[in-house]
Length: 107
Length: 115
Image (spheres, each protein chain N blue to C red):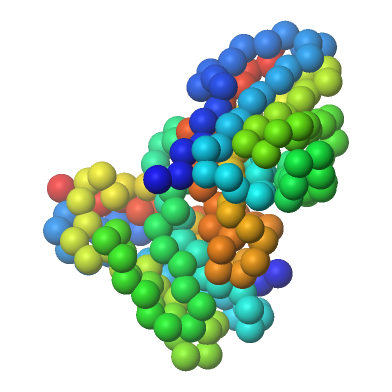
């Protein structure tokens, strides 16, 4: 099971892109990269996942490096409501949540 | 949309009481999970179930048991609640265990306080 490393905290100005990095250098070939976020006192919310190719949905984009050892979650136009803890998981079936990145979007 | 509901948002119990936390999902998911979340420790897996009546221990099963009599419902049981079980409890479900279809969807959480 791959271990992930994320910065403890980040700030981003409202309206700007928020780029959240994640290191998963021990990821194995069949492990997907998942991103979740947790807004204070709520359950984690699924954002996006990918295996090799970059992915985009209505919430975010996921960029995975060619060697799959790291990825970046991009929130293209961050709003105050995006303030949350963001978790990167490289796992199959059984997740291991680290302590994530606390993103603060500033007005 | 997947909906995972938990029986209570907030619960206060006394030491030694038997506590039931209920979780229901409405998407016919195979797998269900119970986590607890504590400050500085992130989410830790207590138990999970990949089928009715099947269960597997997670990373911190001590002091807990689970029950899955119906596919949509997964219960976490604290046989004799203790103060160190004061925590946020989160339930999740996922469609299958196959890679790419194991996205977990979480409920809103139950904040349990044991006095």
